[in-house]
Length: 126
Image 1: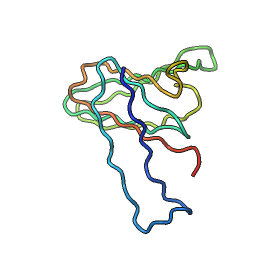
Image 2: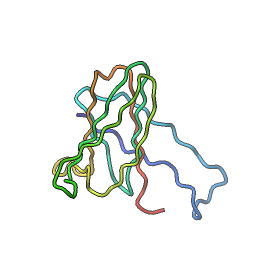
Image 3: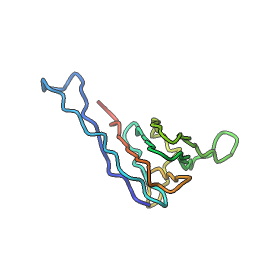
Image 4: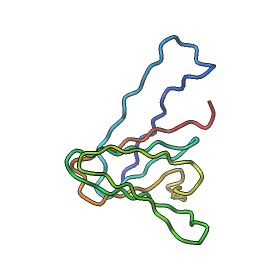
């Protein structure tokens, strides 16, 4: 599994002193065949998946058990040409712990030749 680089978008708030807000590239990268580790820090992460020709199911590995004691992984089901995003709150549900603390594990249902992923960290304070 590969770990996506941490990307933090610029924050425009009351303390922003510039007159021009610099945007940031989407940061699309090709996923890794065995799955990927996505940083989940700050308030959380916006995780995005885009397909171009092949449908895919992306599974997010939930670590923390639900209220009934079950392991409820989350799936994103994308059509052949689709783009979806989720906000992953940094509440420990997806944190792999140990050597992968602060990271969420994702896997893909098919070979990853026609999809892209991106992740943006939402900082803990603004």
